Image (cartoon, rainbow, N blue to C red; front, side, top):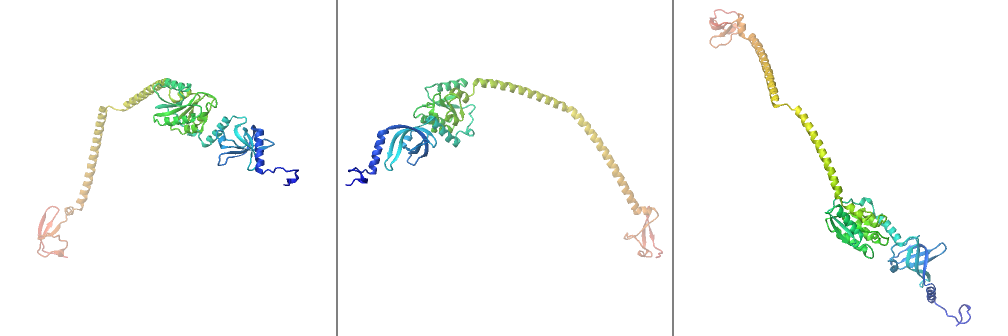
Amino acid sequence: MQSPLGAVGPVPVLSVSELNQRLKASLEGLFGEVWVGGEVSNFRVPPSGHYYFSLKDPRSQIAAVMFRSANQVLPFRPQDGLEVIVRGRVGLYEVRGDLQLYVDAMEPRGVGSLRLALEQLKQRLAAEGLFDGARKRPLPFWPRAVGVATALTGAAVHDIVTTVRGRLPGMRLIVRPVRVQGRGAGEEIVAALADLNQISEIDVIIVGRGGGSLEDLWAFNEELVVRAVAGSRAPVVSAVGHEIDVTLTDLAADCRAATPTAAGTLVVPNRHELSDRLARVSVRLARAVRVRLEREREQVAALARLVRHPQQQLRAQRLRVDELAERATRALDGAIRMARERWQGRVERLEALSPLAVLKRGYAIAQGDDDGRVIRSVREVAMGEVLKLTFGHGWARARVEEKHE
C-alpha cells in the first residue's frame, strides 16, 4: 500500500469520526472540570429546554450548552450580556467537530443568583400589575376573625397573638401552621392561604415570619406564594422579617407590616383607644344635644310670643263679625234704596206712557158697547149705535146721532 501524501512508510489513516473521538478523549483527559468566567451572548432555548449560548470575553468566545437536567435547578434565567461564572468540562461535539463547553453549574458574577432571580421575577410580576396600588384593598376596621399563616415554633406567632389579644381580647384568631423556610415551604404557605380563605368569618389574613437572610426568606419570594397572596379572597397583611427585609410577598399583599407585632396592631383596633374615642364622642354628643335643645327652646319661645290666646282670637273674631254685619246692613240698605229708586223711575215712565194719563188730560176712549172694540175712526160707527166712552174718571154710554168725516 502506498503511503498517503508522500509519507515515509505505512501510516494509519483515521476517519473523521476516529479523529474527533481521539480529540474529545484528549480534551476531556487534559482539562477535566474547569471554571470559566465570561459574558453570555446568543442565548437561546429550543423546545428541548436546553440552554445554548456563547461565552465570550473581549478577545475570544466559545460555544456552550447547559442541558435541561442541569438548568432546571437554576434560580435565575440567563440572558445576553450577563456576566457569569460557569463550571463544566471542555468537549468536542463529534458530529460537527465543534469545540464546546458543557456547563453543569452557573452563577452570576458580581451578584448572587438568588438576588438576580428575585429581580427578574419582580420585574415580570410588576409588568403583570400584581404590585399595583390600585388593586390593594383596605383592611376591615373590626374583622369577625383573623387568620394567621406562620410557623408555630417561632417568635412571629407569639408576637401576633400577644398583640391581638392585648388590643382586643375577644378577637377570634385562627392559626394555620406552616413551614416558613426550606424546600416545600412555598407550597405549604399557598395551601394555608387556600384553607384560611375557605373560612367565611375570616376577614383578614396575616402571613409572615421573623427575620433572616435572603435564603431564609426565600419562600416568600416564590412566584406561587406571591400569586396566592395577590389572589386571596380576604385582604392579606404581609409581616415577613424586619423592616429592612422586603420580599415580593410584601409588594403583593394588600398591606405590609414592618414586623409581626406591627401586623397585629394593623388588623384589630385597640380597646383602650376605642374607649377613649367613645368617651370623647359621648362628650361631643352630649354637648351637641344640649346646644340643640337650647336652640329648640329659643325657637319655641319665639313662636309662643307670636301665638295669641284663643279668647283674644274669639274677641277679635266677634268684632270682625260685627263689623262685617254692619257693612252688610249698610250695603243691603243701599241696594234696597237704589232698587226703589230704579223702580220708582220705571213706574213714572210707565205712568207717562199709560193711556189713563192721556185721559186725565181731557181725552176719552170710545169703544163699541157690544164688543168693546176701540173706535179709532168715525167710519167705524153707525148712526144710532151705542158707544162706551171711558174718561179719566169713570165712563158713560152715548148714542151716535150725527157724524162727519
